Length: 268
Image (cartoon, rainbow, N blue to C red; front, side, top):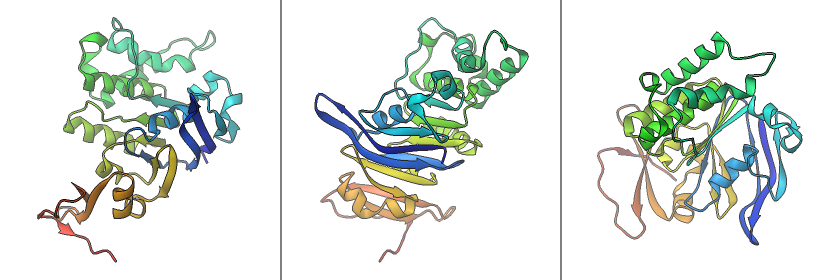
């Protein structure tokens, strides 16, 4: 396993935000972390990244206890894109993405043409190649999010953690970024609100009240019962006739089912 959490918990002011979460992330897979607001997704992601020290339990990275690893060694393996990451306002897009190369630089290995090429590719991958001279404070929220992802890509991690990566993005860039992430030959853990986007993950882990409710393939985990019990909505499971993909349609509890042009799946 690339990344493992065992009985992970985090408590603040005697309130448990995350409790006894155990999960493993397999090499090359895309694991989605799902749950309603306040379920502990962001806190769990920070503990998995080694940014937040757990109150209980352990995180293991490639078989090594993360707590015993130097921060530089962690950063050469794992990158985190936070939901609300900060960046100096007067820094340029180019400078911000170049920071992703920091874990690999030293007096022995200073900046090189290879680093330039890696940064240029990362900017191109997120459609920001033409904005390298723009200052951070002039960017929209969606553009800032794409720069943060470019910085993580420039880090060249083997494990990428993304906390709400489509936050602030328009639909075109949502699809482009998620498609890019899924195509990367690395292990990915991504916290998502959009459950239809989560259907493209290899597995999903559902949190509720800081606890892990279920983990497994999306089609097996995202059931009508989970939708009702955890997300407090009624869900209809449909098949898009265009490509046969599974789609979830949501309604508030208590309302009658609406008509749809999609084909409803049969469930026992």
